[in-house]
Image (cartoon, rainbow, N blue to C red; front, side, top):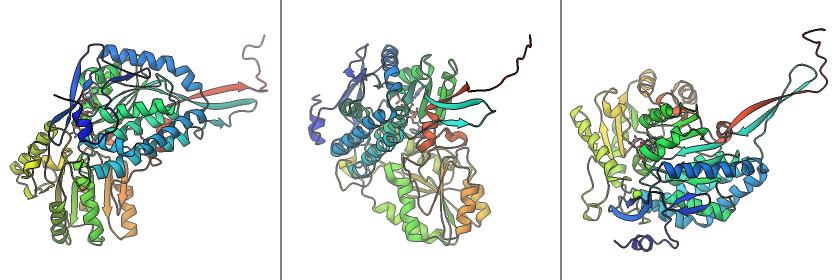
Length: 503
Ligand code: NAP
Ligand code: MG
C-alpha cells in the first residue's frame, strides 16, 4: 500500500510523524514493531506507527530523568515562554493539525478547526502564563521560625491519553505538568497517535529541551501497563474507562505513585418546563452528538419534565435527523464516524440491549444508508426512550451518539434519577428558575454542573469527577497542585529554644 497518499488526500503539507519521540528525536521501536493507524471514514491505513514496548518506555524514562534537573530548575518564566511559543506554533499550524486530527479520529474538520486546535493552543497558553504565577506559601508558625512551603515538581510523570480527543487531551495532560517543571512520558491511544506526535515536532521547534517530553505510542496492555507499574515514574495521569482506571491504580501500588484519574461519565441533562426550549433542544443535541458522543462529559441521559417532554422530543428528533453525517474532511460535515470499527460495534450492541430492555427507538440505531459511508464507522444519531432509569443503557457509558430519554414529574424525581448512577462527572440543567438552578448545582453528584448550557470547558476551570468518574482535577490552579508536591521548610531565625536535656 502506498502510505504517501493519505497525506496528500487529507491536504497535509508536512509528513505524518509515525515514530516514537524519545529524547528529542523520532525513532523506531526497539523491536521494530509497528501498528497501522486507520482512517475511520473508510478504514484505510493512514500510517504504520512504531509500537513502543517496555525497552522503549525505559529509554523514555531515562531521557526524562536526564532532562529533569535542568528543566525543573529553569526559571519558571522561561518554561512558560516555551509553552507560549508552542501555543503560537499550534495556532500557526491550525489547518495542518485540524486535518491530521480529523483524518485519524473522525472529528469533523469544522470541529477540529473551531474547537480541538484552538483549545489545545489555549491550554498551552494558559499554563505557559501560569508557570511563574503558581507560588508557595509562608505559614505563621511559632515565634522565631520561618516556615515556608515550596511547590516542587513531582518528577517523571506518566500520562495515558485516550482516543476521543487525542490532540486536546495531550495539552490538558502536558501543559500543567510542564509548567510545574515535570518531565513527561506519554502514551497516546493506540488507534490515534498522530496528533500528539505532531505536537512533539512543534515542541522541539518551540525550544523544549530534549527529553522533557517523550511520546511512546503503544498498546495499553504493554506500554501503558508498564508506565503505570514503572518504579521510576512518580505520578500517573490517566483519562479513559473506569475499568482501565482500576487497573492503573493496582499497577501503581508498587512505588505508590501519585494517581490522577479522569474516567467515564453518564451525564444527566435535565430540562425543566420553564426552560428556553429552543436553546435547550439545540444545547442538548450538542451535548450528546458533538464528537459523535465520544466524550466523557456527554449529556447522555436526557431527563425531560413531563409537561414539555413531547414538544421537546418532536424538536429534538427533528434536529437529530437533520445532522449532516459525512467524511470528516468535508468542511460541511457535522458528524463524522466513530473512531474505530470496534467501538462502532460496541455502540451498536447497545441498541440491541435497548431493544431487549424494552426501550423505544425514537431515532437512529443503525449505520447510515449512504453508500459513500458504507466502509466507515458511522452510526446515526440515536435516541432511545427507556423504560427504567435502572436499565443498562441508562446506567452504562455507551460513549457514542446514543442518548436515553426519561421523563420526570417534579424536582425530587429529577434529582433522584440524575444522581442514580455510579458516575459523577458532568451534569446540567435548563431552567429559568434561579433558585432551582443553584439548588441543583448544590445537590447534583458531579464534578461539574452546567446551567442553561452544557459541556463548557476552559483551561482555568477545574475539570474532573467524583465517584466512579475518578479523582483529581485537570485545568486551572487545581492542575498545578496535582503536578506538584509541597515541601515544608523550617528555618530557625532567632528562636530561643530551652534545652530539652538541660546539662
Ligand atoms: P481505555 O482502555 O480506558 O483506554 C484509554 C487509554 O488507556 C488508552 O491509551 C489505552 O491504550 C490505555 N490502556 C488500556 N489498558 C491499559 C492498561 N492496562 N494500563 C495502562 N493503560 C492502558 O478505553 P477503551 O478500551 O479505548 O474504550 C472503552 C470505553 O472507555 C469507551 O467505550 C468509553 O466508555 C470509555 N472511555 C472513556 C474516555 C474518557 O474520556 N473518559 C475515553 C476513552 C474511553 P490502548 O489505546 O492501547 O487501548
Ligand atoms: Mg485512526
